[in-house]
Amino acid sequence: MVENSQMLETAQYPRIWIVVLSWNQYDLTAACVRSLMQLDYPNYQIVVVDNNSQDDTVEKLRLEFANRLELIVNAQNLGFAGGNNVGIRYALRRNVDYVMILNNDTVVDASFLTPLVKVLQAEARAAVVTPKIYFMHDSDRIWAAGGKVYWRFGLARSRGRDELDCGQFDRREQVDYATGCCMLFRRGALEKVGLLDERYFAYFEDSDWCMRAREEGFQIWYEPTSIIWHVAGASSRIGKTWSASVRYLNVRNNLWFIHRYIKGPPRLIALVSFIVSRLLLSSVKQIALGRWIHLRSIWQGAYNGWHERDYCPKFE
Image (cartoon, rainbow, N blue to C red; front, side, top):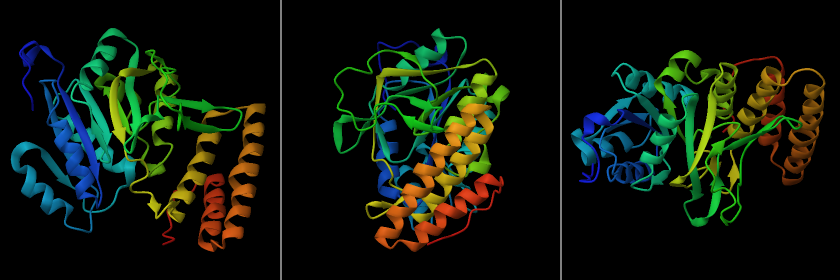
């Protein structure tokens, strides 16, 4: 961790733990950790939570980083929400001020942490803050500039996705939600709102948490001077397409989100949009491509989402 003579003494900086969730991706995780170890912020600790990797990720992490980080190995894959919650609980037990969750398929700018901390210090009602996120292999193209909920369609989507950065998201501002790719939480917000909802397993757990935080009177912030780069979809794709399991979770969790947070007539509009885009149009595409397992995953996700079932089948 880099020392910076221009910074104040370590004790004067809020204490931060950074949780990096790992699953079968040593090269990506190691690159992420190496970038974190170059931060110019003096009071932080890294904890890697491994979600029961089936390769040699854990052994390689232990060999390369030894005592330079904390490593927790889960006995099973707890999903994105559950795996991150293990790290968050671990951090909260160590009297931290802020907790970050960070995707393992990211690398960070050495100065990215300080601007995020300044937002939480300046905005008393801020529960969480998220940085500007670029695509790893197209560094001028935005992956997320915070998140926006499109209530009419019942969708939560990254702002600016796939747009070239021309300064259109260069203002610090409140957003609907912070993407789970990188979230810096205030300890007090986690204690009041609770942790990520593990029923989601993966997808929509970030927007769900932010909706709950807003219901408690908190704000969600985006800070554009904090920069990271994201591979995007590293653990959710088979080749160039989404896996059937990812399609299932997206459909099921999308329905949960609509049921929980959209009320009255707007819910009916959101459900109609969901049926047309998520079910009918997506099904036609899968039929045309002969992806029968994907077709089944979409409809099983819709069934279990409608009936609030937690079941996560294995399709592949």
